[in-house]
Amino acid sequence: MELIILGATFFGFLILGVPVAFAIGLSAICTILYEGLPVAVIFQQMMSGMNIFSFLAIPFFVFSGELMLHGGVADKIVQLAKNLVGHIRGGLGMSNVVACTLFGGVSGSPVADVSAMGAVMIPMMKKEGFDTDYAVNVTTHASLVGALMPTSHNMIIYALAAGGKVSIGALIAAGLLPALVLMVCMLVAAYAVAVKRGYPAGKFPGWAEVVRSLAAALPGLLIVGIILAGILSGIFTATESAAIAVTYTILLTFFIYRTMTLQNFLRAAAKAVKTTGVVLLLIGVSTMFQYLMGLYEVADLAGEMMSKVSTQPWMIFLLINVILFVLGTFMDMAATILICTPIFLPIAMKAGMDPVQFGMLMLINCALGLNTPPVGTTQFVGCAIGGISVGAVMRTILPFYAALIAALMFVTYVPAFSLWLPRLLMGYKG
Image 1 (cartoon, rainbow, N blue to C red):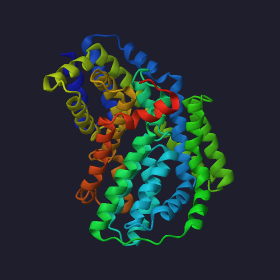
Image 2: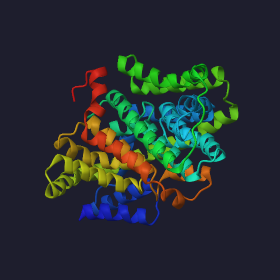
Image 3: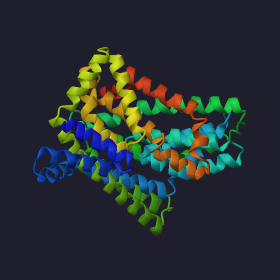
Image 4: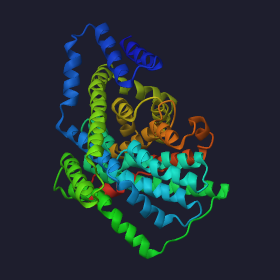
């Protein structure tokens, strides 16, 4: 009965339009009151969930991404991408994919990625004769690569939601190859649609211009190398790397590029504080939720239900993907990670999946949810920038969705995509 109350109240609050963080907290409170447990349990679980030193990486990574977004780094990355692939058919679309991938590496946030790249690329593509729905779809889907990059704070959230079963360093290394696979799939989709619609190709500016734009963009892109080199070499931890990322970004935008203004700095700080507050609230209330799910053995029950459908690992992985995708359509990325990881990670591990590989599966599924209504944060941002309705964009979304699902299938059923680099660079034994 307690489990029914927990699930019914949670989904009931969501249907009523209550924000996810409050829906999680209120459902946990209802269940605790029904159980007759002391109300102090609520606050104890919330505090224990948020009072973790490693969580310091979250505000630092968020702040670093916001500084990159407001510090003019995007323009230089766009120019580099345009010079590299702009001469291919549908060149601006291809440039958009590459630019989103590169900026996702320095921001670590799909929403920041679509905000920065969309503001530059969508108007540019519309001006050059590309359809608005194409420009928006390319931008919103390619920006999802940011969830897999070393600066992604969602990796930190997953590592902690996994309960210490996975190394943050291994996750950071593991995300690189899936991010590359995702970029290639998006390039194929963007090119195929461009050919079908007869979009033009640009002109190659010459290697001298490519080198010049690379030199301009390289200081911003170095942040990825600094984080990777520092963590993989053991010089600093993930938390320390996040602080170093902020310091480097401030020096870069104020003194090297000289594109940061005081107004934009304050805007970036305010947005980072707001995002961090939302994430930590989600973490706190999700800890209560996880406590109750552990108490009622939700993971074991879910595993038993799946085993009745099939005992084949490939089918179990497929079921997990479908469930995560559905949940991601109406839940925020952080909330999905925090709630679903304790349920599905034990099931996936029992079926033979490594927790690092499951982390990549989780992040891609949650990223898909960012581009799917009714939540669809990146979708809404892209449509707002392009001045087009979500419905119009959804009508031509299938090629781009197919690219994302193809990348998800590669990561789900080919463990090497997630585990090869951690094993090579860190000696990971998983």
